[in-house]
Length: 459
Image (tube, rainbow, N blue to C red; front, side, top):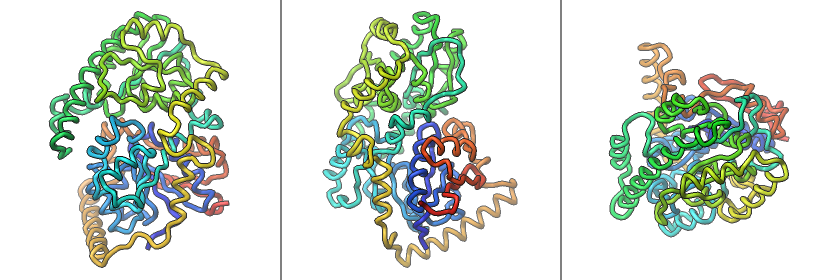
């Protein structure tokens, strides 16, 4: 039976999702929910261990084809938003690449970034109108001025002014294999054909050229800014090796895996990027954002983050722009934030903050749920068989190597790049900033936490 008072929030990339989902939890517990939050891969491997509550997945992409239908048939009330939908190449290709029709049909509701991606989905799948809710993402909600403390670094002391470089080139500089092998595998798994396949190949060619130019630009920064600390933050799915090699050659370059990219932006004179989602978040907070655009394409550029940035095309131009910047004070941050919000108005969710923020929209929809999901007798039989098979598998794994399917066994080096672990104290500190200092946080083990009000019910 569905436990409709429980919401499960799996996390794929901690630096991207953790604080926003804690904010979501802080609001959900006020409405009477109990929230479970933690390591996505552990949940996907161990679904029978979890209560059958309302599941909010990170996306409905092609990699979820073995997860969404299983979760629904096991009795979870499946919903999703897409953590990567805030920044897309264009909405029509986004639908081709990341939103299969059958996957949305596994969901009670799919929460879109805004009206743009919703419209593209409806052009392709007109019968999905009732499934699609333009909500935005809680990552935007926590950029409100009252939550600025969540993005501030308290223990940073590099002794120099900071320039942050955000790299988002996981296609061109993949973490765990060479570029060509990654590309071949990605295209094979995508199942794209025709114009959609041509677009994907063209986009990857474009980002390869952009990455090479971007890397060459970053190599100029240490000498151009000898009194600054250059902090490089590669995407968690990107190899740190080229950036580590650069840091080894320069005393004023470091590659950071600590803190969020947004937190580094808050203490930097400038953040340099191209097409990076963090640029949107940092711009909305009022930071100085510079886009380096040495290779342009009307077809392939990821435009939205660049639109909230000072755009540069030549290295010398970028250096000149950054030399004119210093870490903004409160008044400048307020002005920068207002300008960014104006540029993004109507593009992310139906509102930018206020009572109609993404979290409120999603929770309003979830509280309207009655009988859900509608499972057939075949689904019930699947659930029984799946659970029996799972417990047999778990018993065999436990006999073979002790912990078997536990989180520690799933956190290989690549997984640790994306999910560095959570603890109750860390969650409590964030919840205090979000006005939920009275929340109870229980460590459930295996990198999962349970968050409730002191009485286990909302106020």
